[in-house]
Length: 284
Image (cartoon, rainbow, N blue to C red; front, side, top):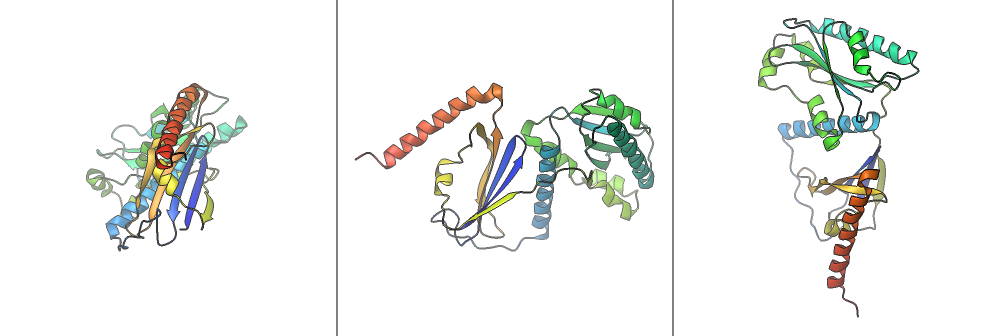
Protein backbone atom coordinates (compact mmCIF):
# COMPACT_ATOMS: atom_id res chain seq x y z
CA UNK A 1 0.00 0.00 0.00
CA UNK A 2 1.45 3.38 -1.03
CA UNK A 3 0.51 6.66 0.55
CA UNK A 4 1.68 10.26 0.63
CA UNK A 5 1.77 12.48 3.69
CA UNK A 6 1.67 16.27 3.39
CA UNK A 7 3.00 18.16 6.41
CA UNK A 8 2.19 21.84 6.93
CA UNK A 9 4.31 23.46 9.64
CA UNK A 10 2.34 26.51 10.77
CA UNK A 11 4.03 28.02 13.81
CA UNK A 12 2.68 26.33 16.94
CA UNK A 13 0.60 23.87 14.93
CA UNK A 14 1.45 21.20 12.38
CA UNK A 15 -1.15 19.76 10.03
CA UNK A 16 -0.83 16.24 8.60
CA UNK A 17 -2.72 14.96 5.55
CA UNK A 18 -2.41 11.29 4.54
CA UNK A 19 -3.58 10.38 1.05
CA UNK A 20 -3.50 6.82 -0.27
CA UNK A 21 -2.03 6.34 -3.74
CA UNK A 22 -2.62 2.68 -4.53
CA UNK A 23 -5.70 0.50 -4.90
CA UNK A 24 -6.23 0.20 -1.17
CA UNK A 25 -6.55 2.52 1.82
CA UNK A 26 -6.15 0.95 5.22
CA UNK A 27 -4.97 -2.64 5.07
CA UNK A 28 -7.79 -4.80 3.78
CA UNK A 29 -9.86 -1.84 2.60
CA UNK A 30 -10.84 -2.01 -1.07
CA UNK A 31 -10.98 1.09 -3.18
CA UNK A 32 -14.55 2.30 -3.61
CA UNK A 33 -15.99 3.08 -7.06
CA UNK A 34 -15.14 6.54 -8.33
CA UNK A 35 -17.89 9.07 -8.92
CA UNK A 36 -18.04 11.97 -11.34
CA UNK A 37 -18.40 15.14 -9.25
CA UNK A 38 -21.27 17.49 -9.99
CA UNK A 39 -20.65 21.21 -10.61
CA UNK A 40 -22.06 21.94 -7.16
CA UNK A 41 -19.68 19.45 -5.53
CA UNK A 42 -16.72 20.95 -7.41
CA UNK A 43 -17.76 24.42 -6.25
CA UNK A 44 -17.99 23.19 -2.67
CA UNK A 45 -14.54 21.57 -2.85
CA UNK A 46 -12.99 24.70 -4.34
CA UNK A 47 -14.53 26.76 -1.54
CA UNK A 48 -13.05 24.41 1.06
CA UNK A 49 -9.64 24.71 -0.60
CA UNK A 50 -9.89 28.50 -0.25
CA UNK A 51 -10.75 28.16 3.44
CA UNK A 52 -7.75 25.87 4.01
CA UNK A 53 -5.40 28.25 2.20
CA UNK A 54 -6.42 31.40 4.04
CA UNK A 55 -6.52 29.59 7.41
CA UNK A 56 -2.93 28.50 6.87
CA UNK A 57 -1.96 32.00 5.73
CA UNK A 58 -3.35 33.40 8.98
CA UNK A 59 -1.56 30.79 11.08
CA UNK A 60 1.78 31.47 9.38
CA UNK A 61 1.67 35.25 9.38
CA UNK A 62 -0.45 36.43 12.29
CA UNK A 63 -0.86 35.72 15.99
CA UNK A 64 -3.37 36.25 18.81
CA UNK A 65 -3.31 39.95 19.62
CA UNK A 66 -3.02 41.05 16.00
CA UNK A 67 -5.97 42.98 14.63
CA UNK A 68 -9.27 42.08 12.96
CA UNK A 69 -10.55 45.43 11.72
CA UNK A 70 -13.63 46.74 9.91
CA UNK A 71 -13.18 49.93 7.90
CA UNK A 72 -16.51 51.70 7.48
CA UNK A 73 -18.06 54.51 5.47
CA UNK A 74 -20.54 57.02 6.90
CA UNK A 75 -24.09 55.72 7.20
CA UNK A 76 -26.03 56.18 3.98
CA UNK A 77 -22.87 56.47 1.87
CA UNK A 78 -22.64 54.08 -1.06
CA UNK A 79 -19.32 54.59 -2.87
CA UNK A 80 -18.62 52.83 -6.15
CA UNK A 81 -15.95 50.18 -6.55
CA UNK A 82 -13.47 52.62 -8.11
CA UNK A 83 -13.71 54.92 -5.08
CA UNK A 84 -13.44 52.04 -2.59
CA UNK A 85 -10.34 50.68 -4.32
CA UNK A 86 -8.78 54.15 -4.36
CA UNK A 87 -9.51 54.60 -0.65
CA UNK A 88 -7.93 51.22 0.11
CA UNK A 89 -4.79 51.94 -1.92
CA UNK A 90 -4.31 55.24 -0.14
CA UNK A 91 -5.02 53.69 3.27
CA UNK A 92 -2.57 50.82 2.75
CA UNK A 93 0.06 53.24 1.45
CA UNK A 94 -0.26 55.53 4.50
CA UNK A 95 -0.26 52.60 6.94
CA UNK A 96 2.72 50.92 5.26
CA UNK A 97 4.73 54.15 5.46
CA UNK A 98 3.89 54.45 9.16
CA UNK A 99 5.14 50.90 9.81
CA UNK A 100 8.26 51.52 7.75
CA UNK A 101 9.06 54.62 9.79
CA UNK A 102 9.12 52.34 12.86
CA UNK A 103 11.37 49.80 11.06
CA UNK A 104 8.48 47.35 10.85
CA UNK A 105 6.70 45.60 8.01
CA UNK A 106 2.96 45.72 7.46
CA UNK A 107 1.22 42.44 6.70
CA UNK A 108 -2.46 42.20 5.86
CA UNK A 109 -5.34 40.33 4.24
CA UNK A 110 -8.44 42.30 3.36
CA UNK A 111 -11.80 41.79 1.73
CA UNK A 112 -14.36 44.25 0.37
CA UNK A 113 -17.91 43.46 1.41
CA UNK A 114 -21.49 44.61 0.93
CA UNK A 115 -23.81 44.35 3.93
CA UNK A 116 -27.38 43.08 3.69
CA UNK A 117 -28.61 46.68 3.82
CA UNK A 118 -26.21 47.77 1.09
CA UNK A 119 -23.50 49.31 3.25
CA UNK A 120 -19.97 49.05 1.83
CA UNK A 121 -17.18 48.14 4.27
CA UNK A 122 -13.79 46.42 4.33
CA UNK A 123 -12.56 43.68 6.65
CA UNK A 124 -8.81 43.56 7.18
CA UNK A 125 -6.49 41.35 9.22
CA UNK A 126 -3.27 43.23 10.07
CA UNK A 127 -0.26 42.58 12.26
CA UNK A 128 -0.06 44.77 15.35
CA UNK A 129 2.90 47.14 15.54
CA UNK A 130 5.43 46.21 18.23
CA UNK A 131 6.41 49.86 18.56
CA UNK A 132 2.85 51.18 18.90
CA UNK A 133 0.64 48.99 21.11
CA UNK A 134 -2.23 51.35 20.18
CA UNK A 135 -2.15 50.20 16.56
CA UNK A 136 -5.95 50.47 16.47
CA UNK A 137 -5.61 54.25 16.89
CA UNK A 138 -2.98 54.33 14.16
CA UNK A 139 -5.37 52.53 11.81
CA UNK A 140 -8.10 55.05 12.59
CA UNK A 141 -5.67 57.89 11.83
CA UNK A 142 -4.86 56.42 8.42
CA UNK A 143 -8.43 55.57 7.36
CA UNK A 144 -9.84 58.90 6.21
CA UNK A 145 -13.15 57.70 4.80
CA UNK A 146 -15.09 56.90 7.97
CA UNK A 147 -15.07 54.98 11.25
CA UNK A 148 -13.00 51.95 12.30
CA UNK A 149 -13.80 49.01 14.55
CA UNK A 150 -10.83 46.94 15.81
CA UNK A 151 -10.76 43.64 17.69
CA UNK A 152 -7.95 41.31 18.71
CA UNK A 153 -7.45 38.07 16.80
CA UNK A 154 -8.29 34.95 18.77
CA UNK A 155 -6.78 31.57 17.92
CA UNK A 156 -9.80 29.61 19.13
CA UNK A 157 -10.69 26.91 16.60
CA UNK A 158 -7.44 27.40 14.67
CA UNK A 159 -8.89 30.45 12.86
CA UNK A 160 -11.34 28.18 11.04
CA UNK A 161 -14.36 30.46 11.47
CA UNK A 162 -12.35 33.54 10.53
CA UNK A 163 -11.09 31.86 7.36
CA UNK A 164 -14.62 30.79 6.42
CA UNK A 165 -15.83 34.35 6.92
CA UNK A 166 -13.08 35.85 4.76
CA UNK A 167 -13.96 33.66 1.76
CA UNK A 168 -17.70 33.24 2.25
CA UNK A 169 -19.95 33.57 -0.77
CA UNK A 170 -22.76 36.16 -0.73
CA UNK A 171 -26.19 34.93 0.34
CA UNK A 172 -29.43 35.82 -1.46
CA UNK A 173 -29.88 39.20 0.23
CA UNK A 174 -26.29 40.27 -0.41
CA UNK A 175 -26.64 39.10 -4.01
CA UNK A 176 -29.57 41.48 -4.32
CA UNK A 177 -27.45 44.37 -3.03
CA UNK A 178 -24.66 43.41 -5.43
CA UNK A 179 -27.12 43.63 -8.33
CA UNK A 180 -26.92 47.43 -8.03
CA UNK A 181 -23.26 47.23 -9.10
CA UNK A 182 -22.09 46.57 -12.67
CA UNK A 183 -21.62 42.85 -13.30
CA UNK A 184 -17.86 43.16 -13.88
CA UNK A 185 -17.47 44.75 -10.42
CA UNK A 186 -19.40 42.19 -8.37
CA UNK A 187 -16.62 39.60 -8.17
CA UNK A 188 -14.42 42.14 -6.38
CA UNK A 189 -16.75 41.89 -3.37
CA UNK A 190 -16.42 38.08 -3.26
CA UNK A 191 -12.66 37.60 -2.90
CA UNK A 192 -9.77 38.56 -0.63
CA UNK A 193 -6.48 40.41 -1.23
CA UNK A 194 -3.30 39.49 0.71
CA UNK A 195 -0.13 41.55 0.92
CA UNK A 196 2.74 40.20 -1.15
CA UNK A 197 5.05 39.75 1.83
CA UNK A 198 3.00 36.98 3.44
CA UNK A 199 4.71 33.63 3.98
CA UNK A 200 2.92 31.03 1.85
CA UNK A 201 2.09 27.57 3.19
CA UNK A 202 4.21 25.01 1.35
CA UNK A 203 3.88 21.44 2.61
CA UNK A 204 6.60 18.87 3.06
CA UNK A 205 5.72 15.88 0.91
CA UNK A 206 6.75 12.30 1.69
CA UNK A 207 5.65 9.24 -0.28
CA UNK A 208 5.94 5.73 1.18
CA UNK A 209 5.45 2.52 -0.78
CA UNK A 210 6.25 -0.20 1.75
CA UNK A 211 4.68 1.11 4.95
CA UNK A 212 1.30 0.54 6.51
CA UNK A 213 -1.03 2.94 8.31
CA UNK A 214 -2.81 0.21 10.21
CA UNK A 215 -1.46 1.53 13.52
CA UNK A 216 -2.75 5.04 12.72
CA UNK A 217 -6.25 3.74 12.02
CA UNK A 218 -6.35 1.44 15.05
CA UNK A 219 -4.78 3.66 17.72
CA UNK A 220 -4.98 7.14 16.26
CA UNK A 221 -2.10 9.58 15.70
CA UNK A 222 0.76 9.84 18.18
CA UNK A 223 1.93 13.37 19.04
CA UNK A 224 5.53 14.48 18.70
CA UNK A 225 7.52 15.49 21.76
CA UNK A 226 6.01 18.46 23.64
CA UNK A 227 2.90 18.37 21.43
CA UNK A 228 -0.68 17.12 21.65
CA UNK A 229 -3.26 16.13 19.05
CA UNK A 230 -6.29 18.36 18.57
CA UNK A 231 -8.99 15.69 18.77
CA UNK A 232 -11.50 17.87 16.91
CA UNK A 233 -9.13 18.03 13.93
CA UNK A 234 -9.07 14.28 13.26
CA UNK A 235 -10.94 13.53 10.04
CA UNK A 236 -10.86 10.33 8.02
CA UNK A 237 -12.96 8.91 5.23
CA UNK A 238 -13.09 8.15 1.53
CA UNK A 239 -12.99 10.70 -1.25
CA UNK A 240 -16.08 9.90 -3.38
CA UNK A 241 -14.43 11.29 -6.53
CA UNK A 242 -11.21 9.25 -6.36
CA UNK A 243 -12.38 6.30 -4.26
CA UNK A 244 -9.26 6.72 -2.09
CA UNK A 245 -9.04 6.93 1.70
CA UNK A 246 -7.62 9.91 3.56
CA UNK A 247 -6.68 10.82 7.13
CA UNK A 248 -6.07 14.33 8.52
CA UNK A 249 -5.21 15.78 11.91
CA UNK A 250 -3.51 18.74 13.58
CA UNK A 251 -0.73 18.64 16.15
CA UNK A 252 -0.34 21.55 18.59
CA UNK A 253 2.78 22.54 20.49
CA UNK A 254 2.16 22.41 24.22
CA UNK A 255 2.34 25.73 26.02
CA UNK A 256 3.82 25.86 29.52
CA UNK A 257 0.52 26.17 31.35
CA UNK A 258 -0.88 23.09 29.56
CA UNK A 259 2.14 20.84 29.69
CA UNK A 260 1.26 19.00 32.92
CA UNK A 261 -2.38 18.35 31.93
CA UNK A 262 -1.52 17.04 28.48
CA UNK A 263 1.24 14.85 29.84
CA UNK A 264 -1.37 13.15 32.04
CA UNK A 265 -3.56 12.53 28.98
CA UNK A 266 -0.62 11.04 27.09
CA UNK A 267 0.21 8.72 29.97
CA UNK A 268 -3.40 7.53 30.10
CA UNK A 269 -3.34 6.89 26.34
CA UNK A 270 -0.08 4.94 26.63
CA UNK A 271 -1.61 2.74 29.34
CA UNK A 272 -4.66 2.11 27.14
CA UNK A 273 -2.53 1.08 24.14
CA UNK A 274 -0.43 -1.20 26.38
CA UNK A 275 -3.61 -2.88 27.63
CA UNK A 276 -4.91 -3.41 24.08
CA UNK A 277 -1.60 -4.90 22.94
CA UNK A 278 -1.46 -7.15 25.98
CA UNK A 279 -4.90 -8.55 25.17
CA UNK A 280 -4.00 -9.07 21.51
CA UNK A 281 -0.54 -10.54 22.17
CA UNK A 282 -0.43 -12.04 25.69
CA UNK A 283 3.02 -12.91 27.03
CA UNK A 284 4.14 -16.48 26.47
